Amino acid sequence: MLTFEPPDDERYDLIVRDYEDSGALDGGTDGMLFVRSLASRTAAYLKPHSQGGIRQVWLETDSSHPEVL
Image 1 (spheres, rainbow, N blue to C red):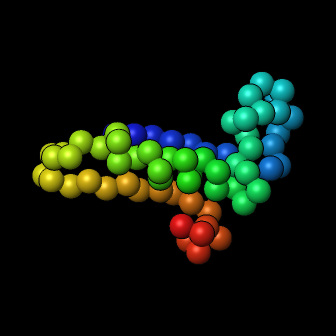
Image 2: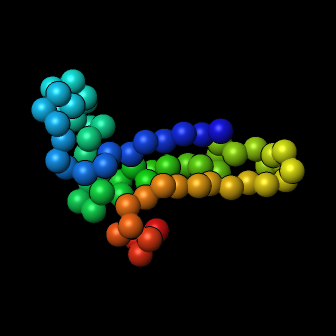
Image 3: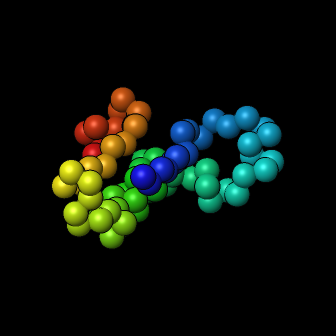
């Protein structure tokens, strides 16, 4: 199992801004920087013959992102 929690949006609580690395909070100009990075590398992390022969990636995204994906 591979888990990934990309940045949600640019409005963060002050406590988050004070303690999180700024790179972890920046999703690029369209918010998809980390999703693109993950998508380009995912195949390398999935076993060719996983249990049941299923190789899937599930993403939870904002409702505005399906067009981008």
